[in-house]
Amino acid sequence: MALTRQVISTLRADGTDALGTRTVAMKVGDASIVSGSLLTVESNHFCVLKSRGAVLNVYDTGQYALETPNAPILGSIAQGFFGGNSPWQYEVIYINRSKLLVRNEGIATSAEMAEMAYVVDYYIHIDSKEEALDLITHMPFAGIEIDTAEIAEYAGPAIEQAINQIIQITKMENINERISDVRELVKQHLGDFLKVYGIMLNDLKVLIMPRDERMRELISLQAIGLSPIEAVRYYLALRMADKGLISAPNAACGLPFNIGAAATGVLPLGDVTAPTVA
Image 1 (tube, rainbow, N blue to C red):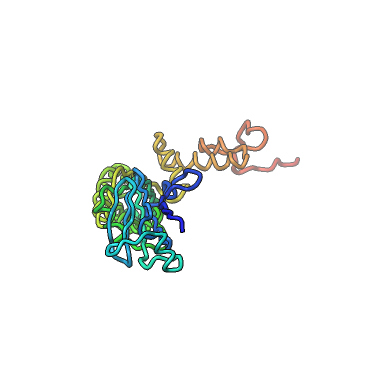
Image 2 (cartoon, rainbow, N blue to C red):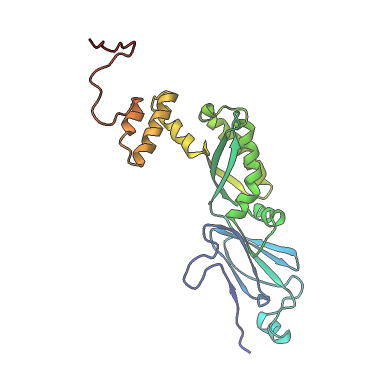
């Protein structure tokens, strides 16, 4: 029986990384992982080794030979005696320590109960072995991996609460003036929330805008110096122009639209006496 060692790695045959830019953690559960298998950990990964639910070790960058905790048996011998399966079931979990981009979107309401759409983009990363353990301890696996979409789903309520805490008491026209306050509050709430899962929060960007597209266009027209009534007229004119209506300039200026030649005179209306017939 030839003595061979299995190599466990996140690198695929074509050289790409299985974790990529969206996967936070990934499980590798295989009965063929036995004592003597080589565990490879890339420079941007942590690796947690578990056996029968218990954490055996947390690895940093490098390559390591696996050993059973009580009686080391070489992989080829174990496979020969146990029909190809190891009596010790290993579970390898790779954790991505690179900065990953996460996005949350939602709806908040202003003081006037107007719906405001928000977009929050932020970067996260796992900084240490202890944080890698916190991640796999507190965040369950729905499948074989945890991706950034699941992180966004977990963080959604914390972000929504922080944004509504300010937006709900702020008039729509004053929201942009308080965007820095919103950003700092979201950063504080989100950072505290993710810390429980061993996730560090880095840069964060918050964008808030009216949910209704027409309202966004009206506010943009007012931003260039138009009064509210002028903004409405110009919005109407733009929509009319999209439809090819030639009266669009008249709507923008607030002038009537006449078909044919303009009136050249005014005929006064009053008592008109019919001429007497002699």
